[in-house]
Length: 331
Image 1: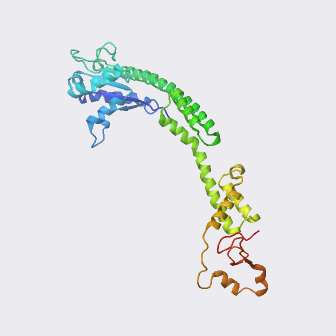
Image 2: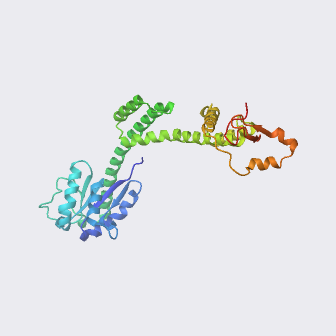
Image 3: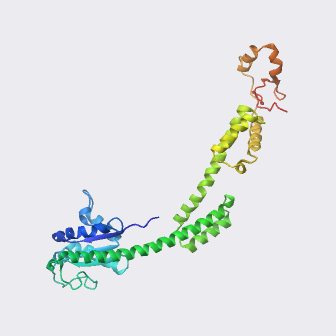
């Protein structure tokens, strides 16, 4: 969450555009850090000017109106821009600052209850040293923008503190990596007390759950690695298998407490699956094992052959499991 610059909307008659252009250089020091300014010349080609103007006007923090007779006579300004600006100013949604650029007939002037610049209603057009007037205009804009920014800063700090309080509550609830129904109810009450909306609360919870979900995923990956090690080395594991699994555990960022007892558990499930598989008939033709036995020296054959007590298949003792039925050959 960041604090956005204060948005400034400049309303003017195109017949008075020279005054807007004269004001531009004085606004430059405020741009980027404190304000972002907008006027209708920034509508891109193909843009819908009516909806674009209304959107910018409805979302502006400060509204500057360069007032003249041409400004008041403009039907669009009089019927659309001024009513929106007055409504938002009255509702404390924006600050409206009229700037008198040319003399005008105040009859029907709808902004007469709002303090304007220059304060004596003397138009900028009639002032020889215009620069001093523009400096005053920008000074007023800066003061208003700084007040809005400070108010937003306070709101931001309060929101930040509330989010941190909720994050601590979530972390405490997730100490056992699960949010129970009672803990969920407590978190909901905390969210309401802190004035957080549900979207922010869910985002905080997701952030706290992410490392837990990642660890769960890595444990699943480690379980698959154990199964592959059983297929490769047999079980119980020799030192080479255990060394491989230790490296795999380190790569996955798992601590010993995360995988304690997991090897025996996975091995038991693996063996159970092997035993639950139905015995398949011996395939016709010569198997790979038969080919290896055929060309094996007689002296080595008796030491390497192990008969499966379950299905009677002859196995070469390179594995602790029967290659036909998966039965454990190590007793």
